[in-house]
Structures are given as structure tokens and as C-alpha cells.
Amino acid sequence: MHSRRNLRIKVMQALYAHQQNPSRDFLSLRKALQQSIGETDKLFLFNIYFLIRVAEFSIDDLQAQSEKHLSTADEKNVSTLIYKNALVQKLTGDEYYRGFVEKQKPHLKTDEDLVRKFYLELKKSEEYKKFVAENSADDKSLSKIFQFLYGEMIYQSETFDSWMEDLYPIWADEHTFVHKQVDTALKTGEIGLDDKEDDAVKFSFQLLEKTFDCENELMELIKPKLKNWDADRLAAIDLILIKMALSEILYFENIPVKVSINEYIDISKLYSTPKSKDFVNGMVDKIKNELMRDGKIQKSGRGLVND
Image (cartoon, rainbow, N blue to C red; front, side):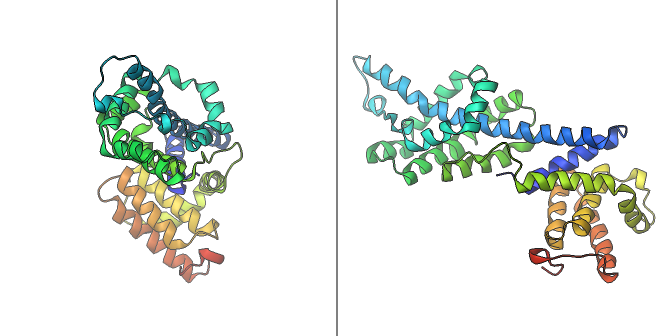
């Protein structure tokens, strides 16, 4: 359930860290990449935990309303079905999720005032009132109300955003990817993580290794195209992205050339200078054309050169 783009960014960050400290060997870089992936997983699981905790607040609310002598109609409009349902059971019953809760103890980090705030806002919404009125716990209804709670309320909240940045410094870089992970989990009812490396993670380690090991060969391809550019004065991220793109083009036969180029252009828009996308695109395209002419690009399956 890992995104290849997100993993490409992590590889870029690992290579950038190496450039700042060239004495680091490959094993230390690989370990840093693995730790970075693990931190994103924790971030995703914490968001799932927080979302479920907001739903769980319905239990507290129901108890509070039962103890009141006078309550408004809106206050009485409580349903624990938003917490006591199959979707929540599946997510909280996941082995990886349970391990996260046991080891990381997210309840110690959770702001209960924020939990209460989101629950009360949800309770006032038309979406929640409709959910309560329908009194349905089918997969579609549950997925819809949770996607509304997370995607339209929690994720869009500046308060939540600021709080998450304080808790997890990587939130600013990872929030879009985490949002997609949470959305997928709510649609499928699956956490989607396990202790085994999925294909995307294996790809990231291979990409790191190839780009690291073939540094000299890749620079030999790049330097003749620099002309009046001083390689030492180029944006460090640009050079790393070009090398990573060429690594994919040369050494990953099942990834289409166009996919590799487009991915690194998009990443350059996010992490480098305003002119980087044109520079990265132009450099990679020139080198790619020469490699194709010389028959040095070997692709197979869905990775055919002309795809």
C-alpha cells in the first residue's frame, strides 16, 4: 500500500543526505530509508487511531446525554453505530494496527479536547444526521460517513494540521500521501500493511542501490550535457532527480520511460526551484534520446520504451 512516488521522494531525500555527508556507506543509507518508510507507516496508523477515537467519543456522548435531565433534540441525536460497526472492528483488529497501538501508545499523544471538538462538529453536520436517521451499518454508509469525517473535517482543519506538525515533523511532506492511505483503508476496510516488503518498497531499495552504485556512470552521461553549467553549482536536488530518472530508464526494464520522466518532473516541482522541471525534463530527454539511439535502453512488458 506504499506509493511509488512517495518512495521515490524518500530515496531522493536519502541520496541528498548522503551528498551532505559522503562518508555514509550504502548500508547506513538503506537503514535510513527503511526508518523513513517506517515513520510514514506510523503517521498513517496514528491518523487511523485518531479517526477511530473521534468515533469512539459517541460512547462518552451517549453516557453524558443519559445522565442529563434536559437535552435538546440535537444533543439526543446520538448513535454509537459510528463506532460499534464492522469497519471499525476490521481496522482495530488488524495485527499491524494492534502492534502500533501497543508499542507506540498513541493515546498518550492524543489531544482529547480536539477529539471532542471534531465529534461535536460531526454531530451537527447533515451527513451525520442522515447517517443516524438511516441507522444503517452497511459498508457503503460506513465508508461514506468516515470519509466525510476524515477527508472533509479532520484533514481540512488548520488546527489538526498544526497539531500534527508539532507531533510529527514529517507531516508537512507526507500529509497528502497519508490522506490517500486513510481513504483507501476506509474504502477497503484494510490497513494494508505487514512486516513483509511490498513490491513498491523493494523497488525503492533497488532504486537507492542502483543510483548509489552507478554514481560515476550516471555522471558520465550527465556532464557532457551540462555545457556551460557547473555541476557543482547546480541545484543539488535537480542532479539527484536526473540520476534517479536515468537509473530507472537504464536499469528498471518494467517501468515505462515516460512514467519515469513524468514522475521526476512532478517531484522537481515540489522539491526544487521554479525552473527545475524544465531543466530536469530537458536533460533527461536529451540523454534518453542518445541512449535509445545507441540501443542502451532495454525495456520489456509494460515498460516498453514507446509506452
